[in-house]
Image (tube, rainbow, N blue to C red; front, side, top):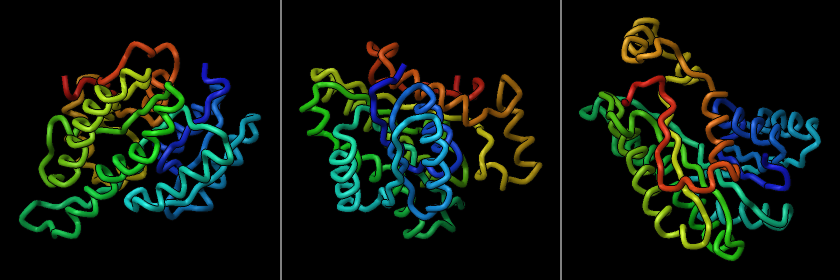
Length: 246
């Protein structure tokens, strides 16, 4: 499904990003595994991808750093020749009620989740135009659609990602470049494992399917959007949330 394609996945050393990188490789894509601090985990993902017979390299970079993103992408283009799929998955949380949320914590989440998405798209804009093809998949969140108490910074960043996705879809459609977002709901990751049992139960009550999603649920949706099967889909936000945001 993705043979001959090269993907750059940000935040790919663990959680949803790791599963996305492995799933894209399973469908035939070569993968650039971006990470910020987890080199050992990123190298493990690279090893697993290479064992599938695909090309893979780890690329350290904080997506919040504009110049570092440019250097990472320039090096990847030199090594791989092209990038066909850009998956903006890297993200952080710094939850708190707004009255207790520091300006630094608000800015850090915006800088990584929203500005980081801008940074990679900005540096890939001209290469995608030159190729006259490409697929950008941005990671939004059910929180960016519904909002969530204690997550004003995260909700704002993900709502911004949705707006950025739609704007980029309009700008790039004429060059055969699709831009979509995936909005995960309650997915079993390290982040959700840290929640209390009471918080988990309260969240499950909001999910019509009454179960937690898996990273694979998200990864398969990303793979579909990156493939030719989704060539007539752009500017969309696909909620993978068990019905939370319907």
